[in-house]
Every structure is written in C-alpha cells, then in structure tokens.
Image 1 (tube, one colour):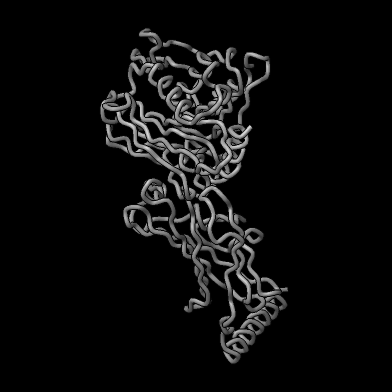
Image 2: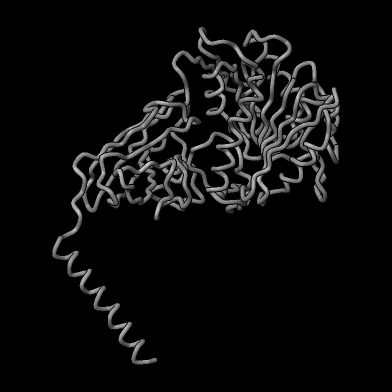
Length: 417
C-alpha cells in the first residue's frame, strides 16, 4: 500500500512539472488589446447605481479592475477587484464575485463604496467630495489591468446637485437659524418639503442629502441645532420651537401646500423628528428616524436634551399616536452606540392617529452608520473630540453599504408619496 501511494504521489508531481514546463514554453497569456469598460450611465446622481461591464477580453483572462477618486481635501481614494473573464471575454461586475479585492461579495457598486484612502485607516475614514454648493459633482476613474499593463480606462461622473438647483445660506443673526436651503429647479414638479438634521455630532450633517432631494423636486433644508455659530455648544436644552420655526420657513419658502412636510433626523436627532411629528401633525406629516432612539431620558443622565414651551421633555418612550403620517425607522442590528434596532422595532409596534402602524427597516450586520446616501465609502468608527477617542459604531462596511442601498430608495418613496 505504501509503495502504491509513493508511485501515485510521484506521478502527480511529474504531471505538475510537465504542465508547468508546457506553460513556460507557451509563455504567459497575452493581454487583450481590445478591452473596453461599458457603463450604462456615465453621469448619474451619487445615489444611483450604475452597471459596469468589461468587454473585449480573452476567455479566462485574469484582470484587475480599479477605481480612483479624489475627495474634497485632495486625498486619493481607491478600490480594486480581481476577476477572471468568462468564456465570452466579459466581466460583468454586477454578476461576478471578485476573487480578491477591497470587497468580497458580488456587488456591482462595490468599487464605489469600498474605496480606501491613500493615508489613514479605512474604518476610520469617510469619503467626502466637498460641499455640494461648490462641488456639485466628482469623478471616479476606472481602469482595467492585465498583468502589468493598463488595457482600458473610463471615467464616470457622480452628481450631488442637478443643474438649476438653487441654494441659500441662512444664519442665526439674519434668519434665527443656522441652515442651508436647497430649492428645486423652477421647471421641476414640486414634491413635499423635507427638513433634515443630524445627531450628537452637531453641525449640519445632511447638506448632501438636501441637495439630492432638491434635485428630485423636494425643497430641502439642512439644519444645525447645536455646535454652530449662534447656537448652543452642546446637545442640551434644545427647544423644539427652533425646529418648528425652521419647518415653517421651509414651507413658506417652498410654496408647498400645508399637507406635505416631512422631517429626517439621524441618531439623537431622530428623537426631535419623532417629537415634531407627534406634537405638530398640522405641520409635519411623515418622519424618518435614522439609527433611532425612542426615549428622551436615559438612565444615569440628569441633563435634558429637548424642551417644549420652556419645559423639559421627559418621555421614557415617545408616543407616536398623534402622528398624521408614518414614522419610518432605519436601524442596524449590530449598532454599538445604542440599541437602535430595538428602538426601530418599538416604533413599528405603535400606530399613528388613524390607527396605521409605523414602519421599521432593520438590517442584519449593519451598525450605527446604517443609513444615508448609498455608494459612498464610509468608516465604522468616528472620533469623539470631547473624549479624544475613536468610537466603534458597530457593523461592517459591507453590511452598512447593503443597508444604505436598500433603505435609501425606500426613504425616497415615503417622501415622494
């Protein structure tokens, strides 16, 4: 038995050596000279998927497809994926799983969201192409390499803002609020106005989303309620009347009917979004709660985040029974900042003023960065300047990317109705 095993092993080695010698005699496969990168939409909004195909390759040819973009600070970002062409000499990125690269699963938009910065850690970095007011678009360059040669390249344009979208900067000094207002092109069919604000990061977090919504017909106001000029430095004792004033200004400036305004709040801001929909159903119809909480008082914390009519808002669970429309909650089940998935499910378990239940989208494997504009490279850690430390948001970049690609169109449908 041992002699037979030795003979079998020696035979396998001999076959391998002969095959290697044959490949050496024939030389490595030549790179294709007619490769092309095909894209269905060379220019599209940043939240729109595109279909990429590499054609003109040799059957079975191994290639590496790369992406490259430069952010608003001049930092270069890049992604890559290695494939083998099919029998027709084609690599369809939406149909093929990469052999290796910056993403692992079949994903036609993987080369967008998996880009990594030239310097710094990918999970601590967030791609930002620049303010949509001054940089309404950016370019992504794709290239195909076979061996050590680049055999094809193509550039696509990603747009934050459509032609004709107008914007106006509002200040506390002049307008009693810090905000950026985007109005749709005059020729666009008008849709519901949308008020957007972020969470405990402060400042204005949704300028890009506001520009995109205005490009689709929604007058949109990106609002800062703390950590900006003329506003409190901390998320503490923030009066809900400030948001009401912003909503009324948005409605008056947009010329919209009384029926339609929606609010979008992220993280701690999701509490304010729910409170606005609950207390002001005559002004706010729908609310979107991104990575939400449901309570305004947290165990072990004495300070109050929100006030109404000068009094602290202290709900253990925010009631949503007076909401005229729908509260849509979006969460990841691996959120490590707080239990947003449980909060989202709690929201979906309650009903609005007409008895219709609210809705929740909870995504497996996603963290606190579950929502927002899809196809943008995003980390899973954020820096807390107060504590000077990095905070784990939970989830993975891939799971967050899948969640954004699925939830963002659903949010748009709610806002469009």
